[in-house]
Image (tube, rainbow over all chains, first blue to last red; front, side, top):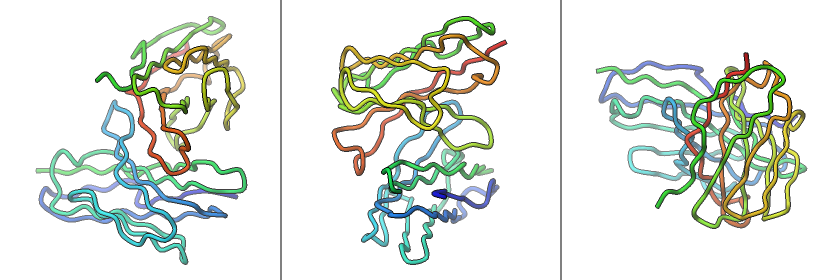
Length: 112
Length: 114
């Protein structure tokens, strides 16, 4: 079954600290992996898209990594800010019918 | 540049009533999508459209109807609303070939069915 699992479900960190969010996927064949940020009460916003041949991609303080061999991805947030408080959603594209498969997200709270 | 908009943003209705959620995008994107988001579930695809007059079912299409007579509009209709359709609904759009291009999401419509 094609699915995406994210961990942890929720996370609280202090402003200025770094954190890493995890994503494991079982999608075959695999094409690409996306990370979205969703602020409370808003729609998701794309952070990165990585194909199976890309290992790392950055977007400002956000750095995503991808290991297609172990089917794992991570999103690293550097020097967190209060505005980073949001849900982060991992999405894999692929499968026999070429679909976007969404994880349930990691809820991040950055406290002052 | 309005981007992608949804209306209404909030809607309360009663079981059995017909409800239409509107979605409008100003980018002339080929693809448009409707998702629902519920606690404990990832975003689930209801319907999508590759172009005007071309629509296809997603993962959870039952109880929903869509149409796309114009490229920029993609309304979603709940023909006879049920409590299980209480959810947050997101419309999204993408350029041709969304397999690699990012999706742009609207702000969402929070629907409550009493």
